[in-house]
Amino acid sequence: MTSDQIVGIDVSKHTGIINWDIIKRQGIDFAYIKSTEGADYLDPRYLYNIKEAKEAGIPVGAYHFFRFHRTGKEQADNFLSQVNVRELDLPPVVDVEDWGQYNFSKNTGIVSAEVQSFISNIESRTNRKVVIYADKNSYRKYIEGRFRNNPIWICSIGTPPQISQKWTLWQKSQRGKCSGASGIVDINLFNGDSKDWKEFLQN
Image (cartoon, rainbow, N blue to C red; front, side, top):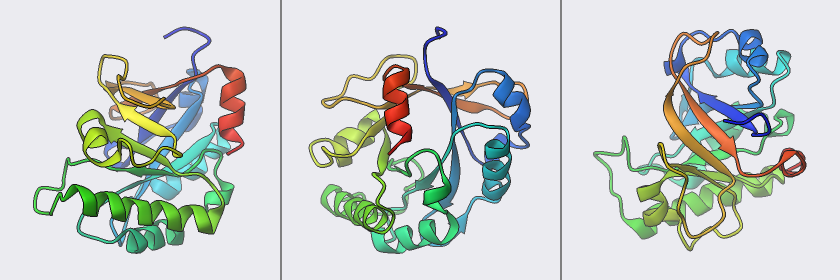
């Protein structure tokens, strides 16, 4: 990583206890924090992490893990009942991936339609664009060619993303270590310079 790169982390309860002041001193530019999952789950570390990261001066955002067996509307309701999107620095994220969906239908058309329902509900109720996170395989299966107007956050471990549309965020590692975090963190890069970053924050 070079000094002019915009570098961030994303975390969840699995990261464990985090001292956000120490994270800030390491030059971390942003943090995405897991908030919700499915229609009724709230990450037990979300409220603490959001509060402490904001107080440390780190731009923050929230992400929702999308469950294939619940409707997009149900999941949008869960997300918005737990997350005050207007108070966050970064646009909201929906995490779409086959991982963890072992017992549920993976019909491409149905999943994509429910993701669209989630996005439409969030955007109409918050006036903020939703970012879509996906690994490469899930991107090609559920996202590619369907969500041209949404920023893409792509997981591509170790190698720069090669996808059909411009990506906004790149998750390059899922085994990162930061002083101040008891567990591992995911490391992400923003695709742009400081001017682009300011525009992204204004979304």
